[in-house]
Image (cartoon, rainbow, N blue to C red; front, top):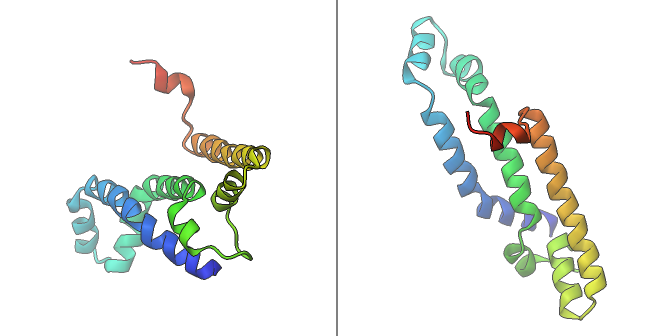
Length: 137
């Protein structure tokens, strides 16, 4: 069931990754890849030496974005879960359904803590400071 859930997450979240990665790839000037090929680099060498270094931050940000979306994902998880493979959002749903709001809140706090941790790690990796985002230059 874990593989089925993983496949459902990939099918549901892949369009988000494609849209964001497409925007990152469109920012790379085509002439950079053409110059690498004119210098004798093959398609894989061009990808490794030109395209991937320029899109590294985009790919890392996509990974964090998908992690954030998958933590709060409920619909596919609710349809495909099994008692052996509960995910946090389904566990919260079940606790709320039976009226056990204390445990639902505890799981919600755990999910929120995971999201905050991912955001803090992302900001640290990209060296984004809060005062840089709030102050207009």
